[in-house]
Length: 607
Image (cartoon, rainbow, N blue to C red):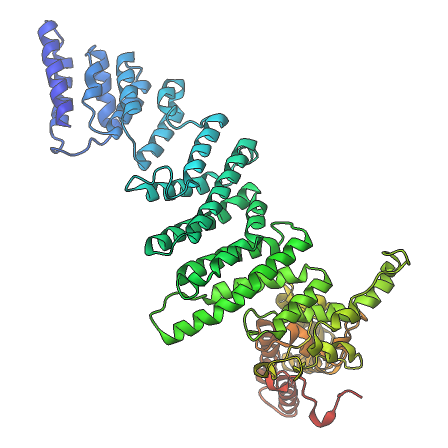
């Protein structure tokens, strides 16, 4: 600030020495604004007030002061920006504007200053092009070259480029973060990721990371080796994040499907060490399972089966070991947390259900014959497999697919052949007379002692039952309430009764209708292939029998609210109170979790 003041004082001093007879009014005006400058606190940034800058620029221009050297006196971007804006507005001489632009183009900006410059430059027009050049978009070729350089550096091995620098790892991490940012959704991203050179560099980097991992894990075990291996696994996790954005996740999945990775991890040298590394490897495996299981990566069935057979046994083996170590040593920090386990189960279930029936049966047979059946929990996949197997032959016959296939004009169904794979499921599949889910207990000949009490309910997912899925749609609650109030209004208008009597009629009608539909009538009216629901009421079918859900709570609260409204509006007078109380008691008790599948005195039981 002081340097600007001193500069102007010096220039005005030289100006009055060279210009004799200068009008006193101009001299008085310039001195007035110089005194304003002098009053600014020492070291304080110049605030670009239009009332201050405009007269100053006007006087300087009118007096023909040479302020080209003003560029060297600016002490902030804001001061130069304010002078530039006003000098253009006042049509000051070109030297003034040029000095401001040169200063702004050369000095660094922070984020807030850059936003202000963009706003001002948009109003200045072509004169601000030297400034705008710093923030204008680069062409596609330059973007691709920067992306390629960053990708090569980010995928370089820890012992390669940049590793000799003390901050080499930080540079690689920064490069990886910027690549993820550059792959954000915009117009140019598809053009870059579709480029053959970019995809080639990405494949080369992926191969280099896998090679580095195998090399380090094959070397002698040490603390340094473990740290390097962790860095490489982190690089693999990063590749899992960026490759889907480049439509190249399949390259990663195919490499990870190979059994060599598991063989390296299961080497005897790592039997009781590198637990953190093993957990990180499982996290990468989850990314792969999710990509395949949820359809991001399309693989042949043989590769999908190979992926499961390669990694599922290792996951089942590692989980109990980590849990046991955590129980023995509370300070042991390497565990598969709940979220990770849920992701594993969800991905594996989706992956299994997309396999051919024979392969599903083999994998489920291996799961049920193992000692660790609690994790991963594949009961959902087993339930759907049982349902599909039970109805497979009839579906093929109805659809005419039984005449498509081999030279004999028929295809072989998997219904009976798959049953030999899971002996403990034989009762469930062959007992076609049962109309509800059956408990499948393990056989002494096929099931370990620790699993003899395990059972799986063969209940299809909710989306297979059209009889109940409608209640999960958005807006059902609102529609339900509107129907109740509309019914009350119609009763009130048609019968001409009091509001309390109308509410009692609606409450009792709601009781009879919902009890008959929800708690008395069994089966489904839509599909014959849902025989497992023939012995269940609608209330027992909804959400596969899961209790205390939001929908169940809503259906329980509605009759209670209707009872309170009806009782209050009738002043709790008999006989209205008696009928309302009886109705709400029966309807609410029927919804208790402990009443699930209960038939009191055999009423409404199976005949």
